[in-house]
Amino acid sequence: MEQGSEPFSAPGTLVVFAHQDDDLLWMQPFLASAETLLLAASPPAPAHAEVISRHPRAYRKRWQNAFPATQSDQAWLTDYALKDRCQRDQEWTYARISAAIEPWIATPEIRRIVTHNPWGEYGHIHHRLVHRAVREAAVRHGKDVWMLNTVVLFHGKGAVYLDLGDWGLTSARTEFDARFFHAMRAIYQAVSFAGDPPDIDTWTWLDGPLQFPHGQRTFVKIVDKGTDQSSERKLIADQIAALTHLVPLKQACSQRQPEAR
Image (cartoon, rainbow, N blue to C red; front, side):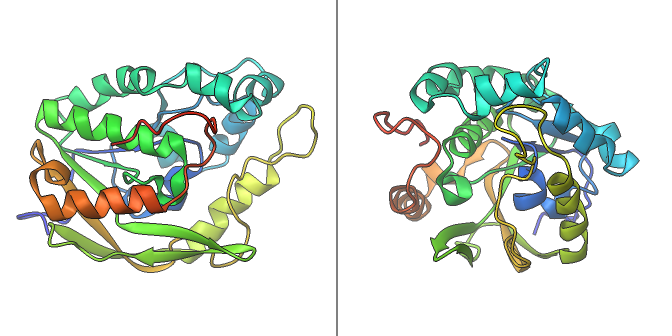
């Protein structure tokens, strides 16, 4: 636990997430206390603006986007969501994401950043790139980085969410609020993009009642005041390397090499 503070309520927190709905899925316990909630690896579409408008006022006031919004839902579908993965990977690179995130992490008032984990929870390339960009910027600016120490493995028509414990790192355990999760997920499920193909709603994950990291979960401090535990401690580095290898890379060009490290 952080000295003298509880990380879920301490001031100076920035939540950085790749796609709209990732903050709810992977960083929910920090949503109530974070100063800023930053969408960092995708442009928002008009449909996302509608989703955000239905969130509580406190969420709307703190939400920010690192990239400009698309002019239409169709543009978002064509130029981002449904774009050929090899073409998209040429545009949504580590360098681009890192440059957009850096100023937010450098802000003096920010003490800690909560973001994705190195293997991208279930392997999403943007989650991995966001983690790397956040972690490396936090080292440069002497900040803390917290992440959900859970790996998601697909099984049958669903997924299982394995808590990996604290790895001997500074950690905190909390419970994801199922009632809050279901209420917010319903907003995403009720809003569809105005485009072709039709009837694609803004929720990007599974729909089952327990399809999120439910129950008690462990968050770990992977960067401590600029010291990167994933490079300083061999056991941590080995565990991350094994998980990154184990979890298949998703939503990326099949011919590319993962940039996360």
